[in-house]
Length: 314
Image 1 (cartoon, rainbow, N blue to C red):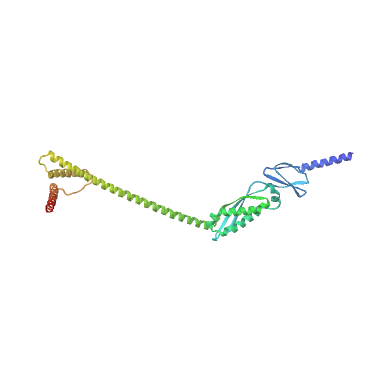
Image 2: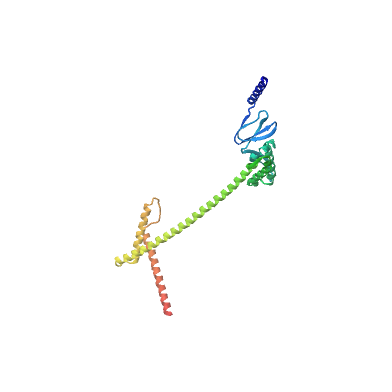
Protein backbone atom coordinates (compact mmCIF):
# COMPACT_ATOMS: atom_id res chain seq x y z
CA UNK A 1 0.00 0.00 0.00
CA UNK A 2 2.84 2.33 0.81
CA UNK A 3 4.47 1.43 -2.47
CA UNK A 4 1.34 2.35 -4.37
CA UNK A 5 1.10 5.68 -2.59
CA UNK A 6 4.74 6.37 -3.33
CA UNK A 7 4.26 5.62 -7.01
CA UNK A 8 1.20 7.85 -7.22
CA UNK A 9 3.04 10.69 -5.47
CA UNK A 10 6.04 10.28 -7.76
CA UNK A 11 3.84 10.35 -10.85
CA UNK A 12 2.04 13.46 -9.59
CA UNK A 13 5.40 15.08 -8.92
CA UNK A 14 6.54 14.32 -12.46
CA UNK A 15 3.31 15.75 -13.91
CA UNK A 16 3.72 18.94 -11.88
CA UNK A 17 7.37 19.19 -12.91
CA UNK A 18 6.51 18.73 -16.57
CA UNK A 19 3.75 21.32 -16.35
CA UNK A 20 6.24 23.75 -14.85
CA UNK A 21 8.89 23.06 -17.48
CA UNK A 22 6.43 22.73 -20.41
CA UNK A 23 3.29 24.82 -19.65
CA UNK A 24 0.08 23.19 -20.89
CA UNK A 25 -1.59 26.53 -21.61
CA UNK A 26 -0.83 28.92 -24.46
CA UNK A 27 -2.36 32.17 -25.74
CA UNK A 28 -3.09 33.13 -29.32
CA UNK A 29 -3.24 36.84 -30.19
CA UNK A 30 -6.03 38.46 -32.19
CA UNK A 31 -5.82 38.00 -35.99
CA UNK A 32 -3.50 35.04 -35.53
CA UNK A 33 -3.91 31.26 -35.75
CA UNK A 34 -1.72 28.72 -33.91
CA UNK A 35 -0.86 25.41 -35.61
CA UNK A 36 -0.77 22.49 -33.11
CA UNK A 37 0.86 19.11 -33.83
CA UNK A 38 0.58 15.87 -31.85
CA UNK A 39 3.66 13.72 -32.05
CA UNK A 40 4.76 15.57 -35.21
CA UNK A 41 1.39 15.25 -36.98
CA UNK A 42 -0.98 18.13 -37.64
CA UNK A 43 -3.76 18.08 -35.10
CA UNK A 44 -5.69 21.36 -35.13
CA UNK A 45 -5.65 25.15 -35.60
CA UNK A 46 -6.37 27.35 -32.63
CA UNK A 47 -7.85 30.81 -32.94
CA UNK A 48 -7.39 33.83 -30.64
CA UNK A 49 -7.70 33.17 -26.89
CA UNK A 50 -6.46 30.78 -24.18
CA UNK A 51 -5.93 27.12 -25.15
CA UNK A 52 -4.81 23.88 -23.52
CA UNK A 53 -2.34 21.39 -24.93
CA UNK A 54 -1.03 18.10 -23.67
CA UNK A 55 2.57 18.59 -22.55
CA UNK A 56 5.19 16.61 -24.46
CA UNK A 57 2.44 15.07 -26.59
CA UNK A 58 1.32 18.28 -28.29
CA UNK A 59 3.20 21.40 -29.23
CA UNK A 60 2.59 24.66 -31.08
CA UNK A 61 4.74 24.48 -34.23
CA UNK A 62 3.85 27.87 -35.70
CA UNK A 63 1.62 30.87 -35.81
CA UNK A 64 0.02 32.28 -38.96
CA UNK A 65 -1.02 35.93 -39.20
CA UNK A 66 -4.40 36.72 -40.78
CA UNK A 67 -3.54 40.39 -41.31
CA UNK A 68 -3.01 41.98 -44.70
CA UNK A 69 0.63 41.86 -45.72
CA UNK A 70 2.36 43.88 -48.43
CA UNK A 71 5.27 42.70 -50.52
CA UNK A 72 7.23 45.15 -52.68
CA UNK A 73 8.78 43.54 -55.73
CA UNK A 74 11.27 45.48 -57.88
CA UNK A 75 11.76 44.07 -61.36
CA UNK A 76 14.26 45.15 -64.00
CA UNK A 77 13.15 44.61 -67.58
CA UNK A 78 13.29 46.13 -71.06
CA UNK A 79 10.55 47.94 -72.97
CA UNK A 80 9.60 47.53 -76.61
CA UNK A 81 11.83 50.48 -77.63
CA UNK A 82 14.89 48.97 -75.87
CA UNK A 83 14.82 51.07 -72.69
CA UNK A 84 15.71 49.36 -69.43
CA UNK A 85 13.35 50.23 -66.59
CA UNK A 86 12.81 49.27 -62.96
CA UNK A 87 9.18 48.46 -62.23
CA UNK A 88 8.06 48.45 -58.59
CA UNK A 89 4.98 46.31 -57.89
CA UNK A 90 3.32 46.25 -54.45
CA UNK A 91 1.31 43.08 -53.77
CA UNK A 92 -1.20 43.06 -50.90
CA UNK A 93 -2.23 39.59 -49.71
CA UNK A 94 -3.57 37.71 -46.71
CA UNK A 95 -4.05 34.11 -45.54
CA UNK A 96 -7.53 32.66 -46.03
CA UNK A 97 -8.79 31.60 -42.54
CA UNK A 98 -10.21 28.32 -43.87
CA UNK A 99 -6.93 27.43 -45.58
CA UNK A 100 -4.40 27.98 -42.81
CA UNK A 101 -3.18 24.38 -43.22
CA UNK A 102 -2.33 24.95 -46.90
CA UNK A 103 -0.70 28.33 -46.21
CA UNK A 104 1.53 26.85 -43.50
CA UNK A 105 2.45 23.45 -44.89
CA UNK A 106 2.37 23.71 -48.69
CA UNK A 107 4.74 26.66 -49.16
CA UNK A 108 8.10 27.01 -47.46
CA UNK A 109 8.37 30.74 -48.29
CA UNK A 110 5.31 32.36 -49.90
CA UNK A 111 7.14 35.64 -50.55
CA UNK A 112 9.63 33.95 -52.87
CA UNK A 113 6.73 32.33 -54.73
CA UNK A 114 4.97 35.70 -55.15
CA UNK A 115 8.23 37.30 -56.33
CA UNK A 116 8.62 34.68 -59.03
CA UNK A 117 5.13 35.20 -60.42
CA UNK A 118 5.50 38.98 -60.41
CA UNK A 119 8.79 38.71 -62.30
CA UNK A 120 7.20 36.40 -64.83
CA UNK A 121 4.18 38.64 -65.51
CA UNK A 122 6.12 41.92 -65.65
CA UNK A 123 8.83 40.56 -67.93
CA UNK A 124 6.19 39.11 -70.23
CA UNK A 125 4.11 42.30 -70.51
CA UNK A 126 6.57 45.20 -70.45
CA UNK A 127 8.66 44.18 -73.52
CA UNK A 128 5.50 44.47 -75.66
CA UNK A 129 5.06 48.17 -74.74
CA UNK A 130 7.01 51.31 -75.52
CA UNK A 131 8.18 53.50 -72.65
CA UNK A 132 5.44 56.13 -73.02
CA UNK A 133 2.83 53.38 -73.40
CA UNK A 134 4.15 51.72 -70.24
CA UNK A 135 3.39 54.82 -68.17
CA UNK A 136 -0.09 55.07 -69.68
CA UNK A 137 -0.99 51.37 -69.25
CA UNK A 138 0.59 50.56 -65.91
CA UNK A 139 -2.87 49.68 -64.56
CA UNK A 140 -3.10 46.88 -67.12
CA UNK A 141 0.12 45.38 -65.75
CA UNK A 142 -1.23 45.65 -62.20
CA UNK A 143 -4.45 43.84 -63.18
CA UNK A 144 -2.50 41.12 -64.98
CA UNK A 145 -0.28 40.56 -61.94
CA UNK A 146 -3.28 40.38 -59.61
CA UNK A 147 -5.18 37.90 -61.78
CA UNK A 148 -2.15 35.67 -62.30
CA UNK A 149 -1.25 35.64 -58.64
CA UNK A 150 -4.80 35.15 -57.41
CA UNK A 151 -5.37 32.11 -59.61
CA UNK A 152 -2.14 30.51 -58.45
CA UNK A 153 -1.82 31.51 -54.80
CA UNK A 154 -5.45 30.76 -53.95
CA UNK A 155 -4.77 27.03 -54.00
CA UNK A 156 -2.01 27.60 -51.45
CA UNK A 157 -4.31 29.39 -49.04
CA UNK A 158 -3.50 33.00 -49.98
CA UNK A 159 -5.88 35.65 -51.26
CA UNK A 160 -4.38 38.45 -53.40
CA UNK A 161 -6.28 41.62 -52.52
CA UNK A 162 -4.54 44.03 -54.86
CA UNK A 163 -1.45 44.59 -56.99
CA UNK A 164 -0.24 48.13 -57.64
CA UNK A 165 2.47 49.41 -59.96
CA UNK A 166 3.82 52.10 -57.64
CA UNK A 167 6.90 53.22 -59.57
CA UNK A 168 8.39 53.06 -63.06
CA UNK A 169 11.97 54.26 -63.13
CA UNK A 170 13.82 54.31 -66.46
CA UNK A 171 17.56 54.76 -66.87
CA UNK A 172 18.89 58.13 -65.65
CA UNK A 173 19.96 59.24 -69.15
CA UNK A 174 16.56 58.33 -70.59
CA UNK A 175 14.80 60.20 -67.78
CA UNK A 176 16.93 63.30 -68.43
CA UNK A 177 16.14 63.14 -72.16
CA UNK A 178 12.42 62.82 -71.42
CA UNK A 179 12.58 65.87 -69.14
CA UNK A 180 14.34 67.87 -71.86
CA UNK A 181 11.71 66.88 -74.43
CA UNK A 182 8.93 67.87 -72.06
CA UNK A 183 10.63 71.19 -71.29
CA UNK A 184 11.05 71.94 -75.01
CA UNK A 185 7.39 71.20 -75.70
CA UNK A 186 6.25 73.44 -72.85
CA UNK A 187 8.60 76.20 -74.02
CA UNK A 188 7.16 75.99 -77.54
CA UNK A 189 3.61 76.24 -76.18
CA UNK A 190 4.60 79.18 -73.98
CA UNK A 191 6.16 80.95 -76.98
CA UNK A 192 3.01 80.45 -79.04
CA UNK A 193 0.82 81.74 -76.22
CA UNK A 194 3.07 84.78 -75.77
CA UNK A 195 2.98 85.55 -79.52
CA UNK A 196 -0.82 85.29 -79.56
CA UNK A 197 -1.05 87.57 -76.52
CA UNK A 198 1.20 90.17 -78.17
CA UNK A 199 -0.84 89.96 -81.38
CA UNK A 200 -4.07 90.53 -79.44
CA UNK A 201 -2.51 93.52 -77.66
CA UNK A 202 -1.41 95.07 -80.95
CA UNK A 203 -4.81 94.50 -82.56
CA UNK A 204 -6.61 96.00 -79.59
CA UNK A 205 -4.21 98.97 -79.54
CA UNK A 206 -4.77 99.56 -83.28
CA UNK A 207 -8.54 99.36 -82.83
CA UNK A 208 -8.37 101.79 -79.92
CA UNK A 209 -6.18 104.18 -81.90
CA UNK A 210 -8.52 104.03 -84.92
CA UNK A 211 -11.51 104.70 -82.70
CA UNK A 212 -9.63 107.56 -81.03
CA UNK A 213 -8.76 109.11 -84.42
CA UNK A 214 -12.37 108.81 -85.54
CA UNK A 215 -13.63 110.48 -82.39
CA UNK A 216 -10.95 113.16 -82.69
CA UNK A 217 -11.96 113.89 -86.30
CA UNK A 218 -15.59 114.03 -85.29
CA UNK A 219 -14.68 116.47 -82.52
CA UNK A 220 -12.75 118.72 -84.91
CA UNK A 221 -15.63 118.68 -87.38
CA UNK A 222 -18.09 119.58 -84.62
CA UNK A 223 -15.77 122.33 -83.43
CA UNK A 224 -15.49 123.89 -86.90
CA UNK A 225 -19.25 123.64 -87.39
CA UNK A 226 -19.79 125.41 -84.09
CA UNK A 227 -17.31 128.16 -85.08
CA UNK A 228 -19.07 128.68 -88.41
CA UNK A 229 -22.48 128.84 -86.70
CA UNK A 230 -21.12 131.31 -84.16
CA UNK A 231 -19.59 133.55 -86.85
CA UNK A 232 -22.81 133.50 -88.83
CA UNK A 233 -24.82 134.49 -85.78
CA UNK A 234 -22.33 137.26 -84.91
CA UNK A 235 -22.44 138.72 -88.42
CA UNK A 236 -26.21 138.81 -88.44
CA UNK A 237 -26.47 140.47 -85.01
CA UNK A 238 -23.72 143.01 -85.77
CA UNK A 239 -25.38 143.99 -89.08
CA UNK A 240 -28.68 144.57 -87.29
CA UNK A 241 -27.21 146.66 -84.45
CA UNK A 242 -24.79 148.83 -86.53
CA UNK A 243 -26.36 150.65 -89.42
CA UNK A 244 -24.36 150.68 -92.61
CA UNK A 245 -22.06 147.81 -91.53
CA UNK A 246 -21.50 145.21 -94.16
CA UNK A 247 -20.66 141.53 -93.83
CA UNK A 248 -17.14 142.34 -94.99
CA UNK A 249 -16.66 144.77 -92.10
CA UNK A 250 -17.85 142.20 -89.63
CA UNK A 251 -15.46 139.58 -91.04
CA UNK A 252 -12.54 142.01 -90.78
CA UNK A 253 -13.41 142.69 -87.14
CA UNK A 254 -13.71 138.97 -86.31
CA UNK A 255 -10.46 138.24 -88.08
CA UNK A 256 -8.71 140.98 -86.15
CA UNK A 257 -10.06 139.64 -82.85
CA UNK A 258 -8.90 136.10 -83.60
CA UNK A 259 -5.52 137.42 -84.70
CA UNK A 260 -4.90 139.14 -81.36
CA UNK A 261 -6.20 136.11 -79.44
CA UNK A 262 -3.64 133.99 -81.23
CA UNK A 263 -0.83 136.39 -80.33
CA UNK A 264 -2.01 136.28 -76.69
CA UNK A 265 -1.89 132.48 -76.57
CA UNK A 266 1.59 132.46 -78.15
CA UNK A 267 2.79 134.93 -75.53
CA UNK A 268 1.44 132.79 -72.69
CA UNK A 269 3.19 129.65 -73.99
CA UNK A 270 6.53 128.85 -72.35
CA UNK A 271 8.08 127.83 -75.67
CA UNK A 272 9.35 130.39 -78.13
CA UNK A 273 7.85 130.40 -81.64
CA UNK A 274 9.13 132.75 -84.35
CA UNK A 275 6.60 133.72 -87.01
CA UNK A 276 6.71 136.54 -89.57
CA UNK A 277 4.64 139.47 -88.32
CA UNK A 278 3.99 143.01 -89.50
CA UNK A 279 1.06 145.44 -89.15
CA UNK A 280 0.43 145.17 -92.86
CA UNK A 281 0.02 141.37 -92.55
CA UNK A 282 -3.46 141.74 -91.15
CA UNK A 283 -4.56 143.92 -94.07
CA UNK A 284 -3.10 141.38 -96.51
CA UNK A 285 -5.09 138.58 -94.90
CA UNK A 286 -8.25 140.70 -94.93
CA UNK A 287 -7.66 141.59 -98.57
CA UNK A 288 -7.29 137.91 -99.51
CA UNK A 289 -10.51 137.01 -97.70
CA UNK A 290 -12.35 139.92 -99.29
CA UNK A 291 -11.20 138.95 -102.80
CA UNK A 292 -12.25 135.35 -102.17
CA UNK A 293 -15.70 136.42 -101.07
CA UNK A 294 -16.10 138.73 -104.09
CA UNK A 295 -15.01 136.00 -106.49
CA UNK A 296 -17.38 133.57 -104.85
CA UNK A 297 -20.28 135.96 -105.13
CA UNK A 298 -19.48 136.65 -108.80
CA UNK A 299 -19.37 132.93 -109.58
CA UNK A 300 -22.69 132.42 -107.86
CA UNK A 301 -24.27 135.35 -109.77
CA UNK A 302 -23.09 133.99 -113.15
CA UNK A 303 -24.41 130.54 -112.34
CA UNK A 304 -27.80 132.00 -111.52
CA UNK A 305 -27.85 133.97 -114.86
CA UNK A 306 -27.02 130.83 -116.79
CA UNK A 307 -29.84 128.96 -115.11
CA UNK A 308 -32.34 131.72 -115.98
CA UNK A 309 -31.24 131.77 -119.64
CA UNK A 310 -31.64 128.03 -119.89
CA UNK A 311 -35.18 128.33 -118.54
CA UNK A 312 -36.05 131.05 -121.07
CA UNK A 313 -34.71 129.04 -123.98
CA UNK A 314 -36.74 126.06 -122.96
